[in-house]
Length: 171
Image (spheres, rainbow, N blue to C red):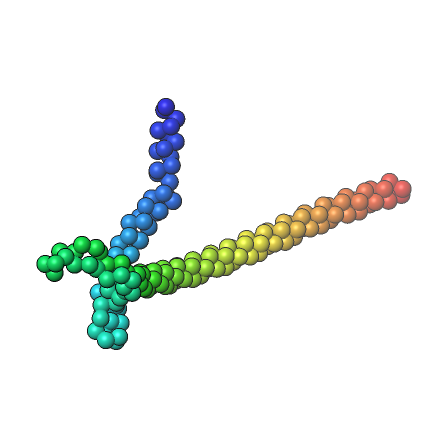
C-alpha cells in the first residue's frame, strides 16, 4: 500500500498533471466567457438583424399545446423542434474553437521561435567549441613540432660533436 501512495505522490507532483489541471480550470472559465459573448452580445445582434426575435426561441411547432377549458392550464404540451438554441450552441462552439485555435497558434509560433533560437544558440556554442578545439589542436601540433625540432637540433649537435671527436681521434 505504501508504494501506491508514493506512486500517486510522484504522479500528482509531475508538472504535466498540474499544468493540465490549471488548463482545465482556465478552460472552464474561458468557456463561460465565450458562452456569455455568444448569448449576451452576438445572438441579440443576430436576433435584431432577423426581425427582433430571440434566436434561441426559434422553433418549428409540430403539434400545438392543448389548453384546458379555463384557457390557462395546459393539458398536452407543445411538440416542437427547437433549432434556435441548437444554432446558438453551434455558434458558441465555433467561437470557442476559433479562440482556442488563435491562442494555440500564438503559443506554437512562440514555441517554434524559442526552439529556433535555442537551436541557433546551440549551433553557435558548438561552432565556438569546434573552433576552440581546432585552435587547441593547432597549438598542440605547433608545440609538438617545436619539441620535435628541438630534439632534431639536439641530435644534430650530438652528431656534429661525435664527428668532431671522431675526426680528432683520427689525427
